[in-house]
Image (cartoon, rainbow, N blue to C red; front, side, top):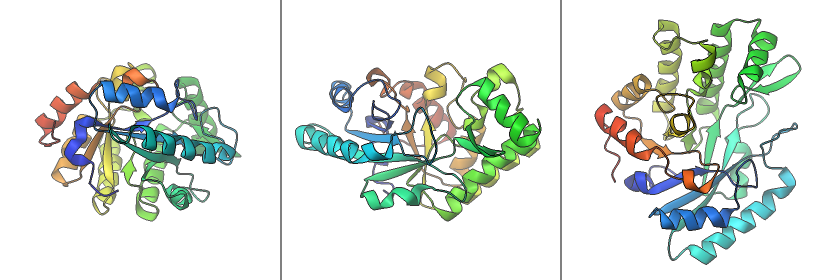
Amino acid sequence: MGHRFLATNLKSSLHVHTTFSDGKADPEEYVRAAIDLGLATIGFSEHGPCPFASGWNIARERLPDYLDEIGRMKALYGDRIEVLVGIEADFLPGVQGPDSFRELGLDYVIGAVHFLRTGGGFLEIDYSPKRLKTVLDEGFGGNVVDMVSAYYAAVREMIETQPPDILAHLDLVKKFNREMRLIDENEDWYRNEAFGTLESLARTSTVLEVSTAPIYRGFCDEPYPSRFILEKARALGIPVVVTSDAHWPDALNAGYAETAALLANVGYDIGH
């Protein structure tokens, strides 16, 4: 993908989920909404298949139908809006990552870490506070530093070994911090983990996602990633793309205005 979408940063929505995974509407509803919103580009990025049961990843046998349907959207609406097909690939160390989906001929791949290993398997860190507490206790003996360090280590391993086109929600591990208060983002150890991850990112052509989802969904006051991370990313020259991680059509550009203002204040020129 490179940086070819960045000129229309605020006129695109590249992180979109439909009923093929855990979204709430079919692709055509999103395309029509994107046209109504005046977007220039919509990109679909269903959660890619995982090798274990999950309530929100697309089933592998549905991938052909997904690709066909987005192809149909391209044919139907391509004269009114650019329609792209991608996937949000879960990085599971030693199991799968962005490279696992390159053979599908996608327009782009978003790379993400949602799962950490806990004993005999993987569990999500972003499903619920209760699930996160299970990950913390069963996977890391209640040690927050170990859990957070493992998360960032997995993100760095993905960046360094299977760099995606877009890196999703870099600091997803903070999602339930308002309720659980597990992390102090001002502590040196935490900032070192985040900054070390950015330094790995800066050595690639991967674009950093700035996701508005935690703001409009009420989890956090700042996007993924937090302002201090964005300031460091700007200093390192890392390109960014604004997304909403939309799970319903009216969220395609939710939170864009305030996030654009934040990015401008940090020093990014992301267009209009």
